[in-house]
Image (tube, rainbow, N blue to C red):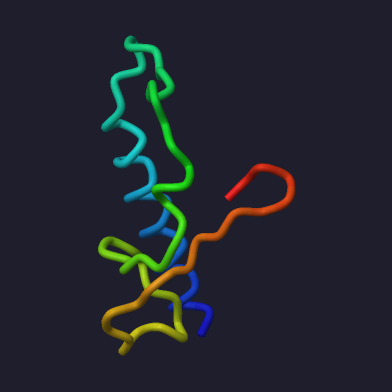
Amino acid sequence: MRIAFAIAAVLTLTFGAAADAERDVSKPMVAVAGFQKQRLVGDWFEVATTPSMLEQDCHGVTTAIATRDDSRL
């Protein structure tokens, strides 16, 4: 079990560092103009996710997005 955890930790650190190199930090991040939160409300299929231990054989996973009282989704 410890070996599996160590391998998972190494892979996470390795691929996490590679993912950080994808963004060009010389260009500032800009918020999208005309963003409408209401268009996101509803059920969505999760296309690109990393499954957890409980989701390894799941297919067609969905997530539900709803509005909250504090103006967040």
